[in-house]
Length: 136
Image (cartoon, rainbow, N blue to C red; front, side):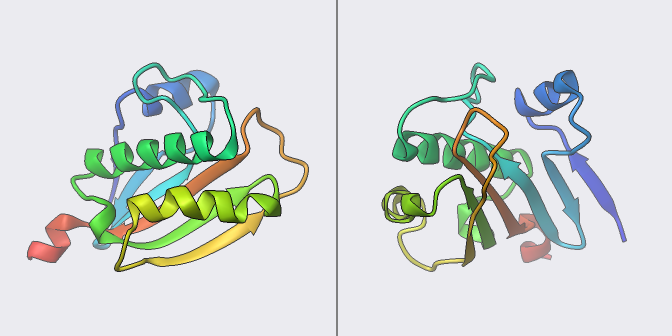
C-alpha cells in the first residue's frame, strides 16, 4: 500500500499549529480520504460562524478545496459523513448539500453528535476516488 499525505493550504498548517494529530487529506490505494472538516474559511483559517446553512456551506467549500489539493473533485466522491450537533439540522443541511451534489449522489451518513466540544455545529468528511486511479 502506498500512502500519501496531501498538504492543504491554510488547513494543514492550522492543524499543525493547533497540535491536532491528524492529516486533513490522505491518498491511499486509489482513494482520497478527507478528514472531518469544520466550517473553516480557507482563506483565513478562521471558523465561520452563523446558522447551520452558513456553516454547512463553509464546511463543503473547505472540503472542496481539500479535494482539489488532492487533484480530485466532488464528482469523484463516493461516501460522505456529516456530523451535526443537532438532528434537527437535517433538512437545512440537505438544502445546502444538494447544491453541491445535485445528482449522482454519493453514499451518505448523517450522524447527530452530542456533547459537541467545538465552536461550530457541523463537520463533513468524504471519501473520493483518486482522479489518477480513474485515468489509469
